[in-house]
Amino acid sequence: MRMIQVKTYEELSRKTAAIIAAQVIAKPESILGLATGSSPLGTYANLAEAYRNGDLDFSSVTSVNLDEYVGLTGENDQSYRYFMNTNLFSKINIDPKKTFVPNGCADDVTKECEEYDALIQSLGGIDLQLLGIGLDGHIGFNEPDDCFTKETHRVTLDPSTIEANARFFASIDEVPTEAVTMGMQAIMQAKKVLLIANGQNKKEILEKAFYGPITPQVPASILQLHPDLTVIYSEN
Ligand code: GLP
Image (cartoon, rainbow, N blue to C red; front, side):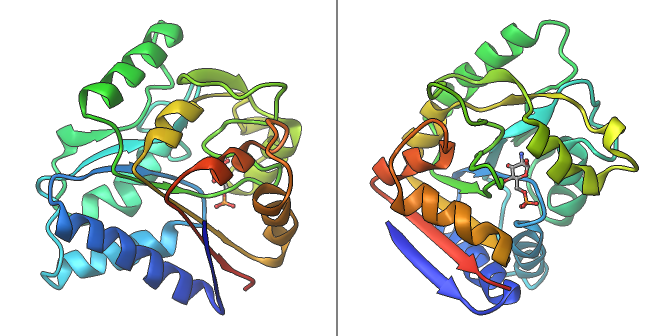
């Protein structure tokens, strides 16, 4: 594991974007595993800027996102599909048909989960997976549990996650209580994993996840076993 500590969120965002840019330059047909939340916003802005400057070409890239709320359509401005379209996809030249986010409104969510794993397999797995981390140690929406779940699956969100994510909604009652998330297999099979976190409030969970025991009660701790993990943290 490489733990890179930086001073500001801007520096974190520039470094993270530089690592993703290097991946896309070295392998234009990369499969990028992408994340939502506030942490990657600066990274996505930097990637969009590099595209505008003519330094990056996303035309051969495919993206697979980690998760989506159950019950929100892509038109809902709180859905992760909407987040990705707004903050990244509409600002770069990625082919929209090659951007994948789980469908939280599928009639058959179990089938949707199976198909999402089959899709990732058919793409040959993820080259670079970007992750944030929840205050309870969740990655994607893999919440603390008695075991790690391999496959893409439907989850009931922890009350603490609902509370943490309420800041994006008009009220806490509007936060969906369930989500679909990529499981640990696709994440752990990614060739490179890049986890980013900022703020004092993430310090304790980072210590638990990367310097504590590997346990499904702290889902991100499984990443200690990944052969190519980079963590970038900024206290501010
Ligand atoms: C959500 C997402 C996670 C993300 C987490 C942290 O719960 N499902 O993928 O890592 O939020 O978000 P933030 O970056 O806003 O702290």
